[in-house]
Image 1 (cartoon, helix red, strand yellow):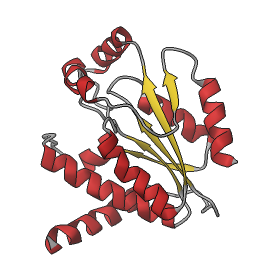
Image 2 (cartoon, one colour):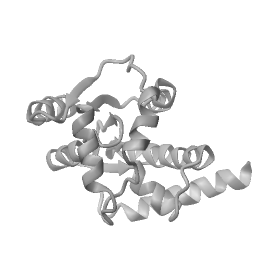
Image 3 (spheres, rainbow, N blue to C red):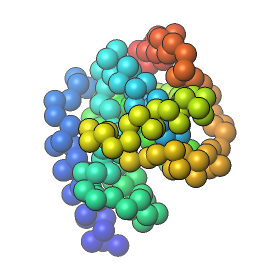
Length: 195
């Protein structure tokens, strides 16, 4: 266990170095958790947020491929990924750096870890559930299949397997359908983050 914990710390520090220049620390950093199935538009939405807010974007798909260049998507691999990701997230928030987390975060049990981090560090938590009509998701996933620059390997079959795992978010959150204009939701979230 001590060896694995040391490896987690080492990997979180290595990931911190890959983030490049960080925004200026804030007296009151915030934490935006973006949740949704593959292909619903989470990454698109997160990029729109980063255009408007001084944040670090942590994308679980990109981080997985840094930690595991040839990912196999086992439960053990995902567990390790999120232990490293949670430690990195804490390091950033403790430095006053606001964070947007782009990950499926489908179960309340998984989100509970994120709620605990925000509560323990006393940072503003903003939760966003992203969705899109299934037919549009299927088209998006088909269009990105085999695109080398794509960070996610999820396809329509992965979407269908993950869909039953979606659990209601029990905390206050924004619901955003990316088949519509996301600008009003972006505006509301930006105002809440900077308030």
